[in-house]
Amino acid sequence: MELTNTTLSDFRAVMALIDAGTFRGAAERLGLSPSALSRQITGLETRLGVRLFDRDTRNVHTTASGEAFGRVARRMLYTVEDGMAEFEAYVSSRQGRLTIAGLPSVTAGLLPRLIGAFSVEHPGIDLRILDALSGSVLEAVESGIADLGFAAGTVSTRSRMHFEPLLDDEFVAIGHPDGPLAENRGYAWAEILEMPIIAMAEGTSVRELIDGACLRHGTSLSPRFEVAHLATAGALVSAALGVTALPTMTLPVLNMASLIQRPITDFGAKRRIGLVRRTGRTLSPPAAAFTELVKRSRLVR
Image 1 (spheres, rainbow, N blue to C red):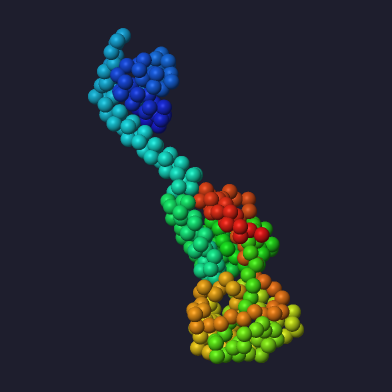
Image 2 (cartoon, rainbow, N blue to C red; image 1 turned 60 degrees about the vertical axis):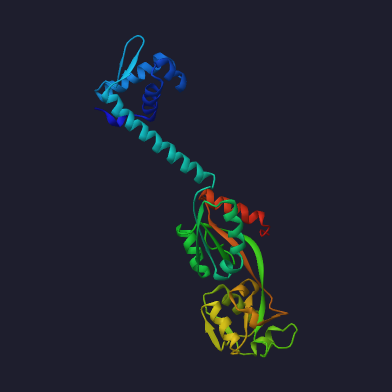
């Protein structure tokens, strides 16, 4: 018995013949001639080593083996139909999974609106969000753990990565209402550096830009506190322990109801946020659909 040579076409032929009861009726359903269908059934019976149908010049009767094979054929066809329907849903972005990596400030300040719109258009797509520092975002996308990433800066040194700029995020000073930033005006960077500074830790995209601003002004940063998380920086500022400088997109992470923000008149740089993906790799349908939504949102520069 040569089961491995049985094809979907054979399953369809058997089911059509069982359901129609005649070679002519089954052949019409399949778009074949009765003689071609007869040869296919005969060839299948030869490979299986059993008779599936008893037939004479007028009638076709399913044998016990034919009924058993018909049950198998029906299950196989249902499985294929379900599988193809699932694949079609995936290709059309009706089903599937999308993993997005992003800086915490981006996942909090930018992604909620985008994800909300995407979920309305593609309710069957499961979303997974990985919030991490910039280097970890790039690694997640490069390794394939994430389909897309939102990172700061550029990735020109990574040949396998493509960075598409979306927007520029301006730095502002954040302080306690009764602290050094109480006066409602813009502050020069040199003024802020004279205040007790609460700085993000080295290795973060924010710290890289802060250090760059200090370098441009010919000075160095001597923070009073150094923290790894934005929420911690906000908590220390709320306790009137110092001031901090952060991009505006980070502000939703902080409790700004009890804080104030002031312009920095000469910071000299903005944090560029962009969408990262691997070059030379075709995006999955959900990732392609999300990328298209980002472009339609007019974030792209």
